[in-house]
Length: 364
Image (cartoon, rainbow, N blue to C red):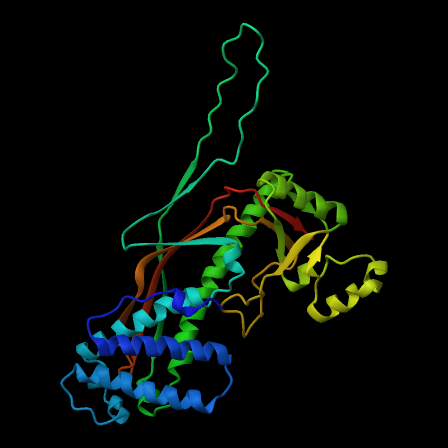
């Protein structure tokens, strides 16, 4: 996981609200580290946080705080001032969670940029071509004119939304797991972003394959592996190249049976793949489920039949753009007997491909 402190929230004027925001982020971080395991200390801290948060929200309504049980009253939870404080804190907690839970390995494929609300993302990629050196005959003043143009691309973010009901009866009972809830919201957005990155990257490789690109090879073999790695390295000023893929894909890069007898078999048995193959560093991309398929088809997000070759320190082929300093959280009354609060959480983002540096792939 990326460090949560790398992503900042937008401070509010109320110092109590800022403490609640920081506490909510830390609670979510702990929930992420526990990976769903039951923990007595976490449950205790979650209950204390829940009570402090709800007391802060009720304070804005003019009602006297008597405990979580008062949240059973829909007149309180539907109060405009209650909702105002609730959404202000929630939006700042979720803002750093979504990018923080995206695997670092996905960020090896994507460059992330943030702009203000209403702004457009602008990416400039320098030309990777070189000047040709001409033989000029005596008496000839100039050779052929050459121009190198930098590429510029703009990305316009579009709204991505999660809309669901929140049952305050669980909150009133003190059993609502706030860390797990905010984590699920962040992971849902993160999964959607990862899916966009993978789909965009896959489409680029499909287009390169159709164009018979010299940087894409079909079928794993030592000659293909070495050829793609060398071409990517040479096209990127001899930068070091690393090969990325899922555990299944990296497992195809194994030496001959004779090579396995010299200690390499033990390494593969422990990790599933070698640290290096033919001089190229191997890196695993963590697999993920496609959102909405966990309880149905259990479809995996990352193709198991592609090896990606990326040059270190070069332009990342996928651009991810976030608009604004925080997600937008709105309350929407839903037609239920207890006036359950509907929450609309909106994040504005855009994803596009800009192939400024050459990368390669082997389709297995």
